[in-house]
Length: 196
Image (cartoon, rainbow, N blue to C red):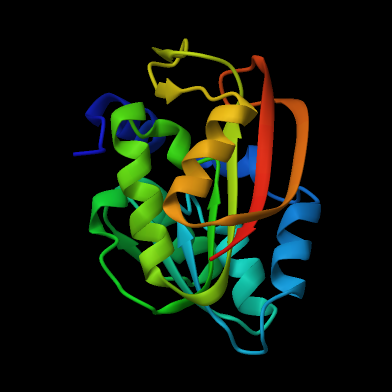
């Protein structure tokens, strides 16, 4: 099962701090994701955190389902955005041919490497044909905990391309960069836009 209790405990304890970090961020990847979806599209925010992206998508006119494993993140999303978050893990994604788009921004980086192929296939199956998938992860190698105790799996672009290709996705755009996260460290990242 792809849930690490220590990682969830960190997010429960630091939900407000995390929300302050991500609130008000200009997100060009999210804007591009929303722009390619049909009007009123069914969208899943997989690992939504405090749901700032989910709220942006809802306010844009999309029909959003938000899923996260942190009860405190879900409670903050309800207070701040009046958005109901379904409590669950990546393993709870079982829908078939349901979503026009799935947004997984820096959430699947907490899944063990051994589970990633299975999760990507579940995402592919949950999308309607041609559906959009946006993925953000940290780049590097190995699996380890950060100084806050969160479990991370790091990927290089070549490995991600192979995983996405094997799951059935076509990659349409890749971006890379670096930024400061909740732990205060500067980490390299990669985002990939795909369609089923």
